[in-house]
Image (tube, rainbow, N blue to C red; front, side):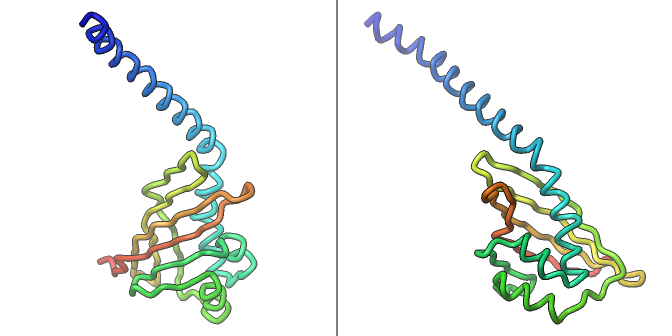
Length: 157
């Protein structure tokens, strides 16, 4: 009986120590990735990705998108990397300005990033917004977008 009581009284302490190690280890790993990669990911989403579409730069877009990239657009259509590259070759953007507002950026210890937010498109005095979520994976030291989902396209009064 005394052994049972001893084990029961030690168990919470043991579990707490294990949890602390897991939490501490994970936090350190996430911070090690985040401190280096957070700015790269922000620049990629706020600067490079819009630039590729604005300037019809297929080389830049090819560098951003993984070969397995798939997107679901605001109408629910699925596209691939090849579709996106073909699209920007023939379609110029018809906007005066654009910016992307990052609302969520999570970098997981396994080298996966979730990057979500709101796109703001301006034409004359009209603003259109959309919501998007993106999944990027770090492969051989480079972040590649593998998935995007766009929804909630609407005109702002």
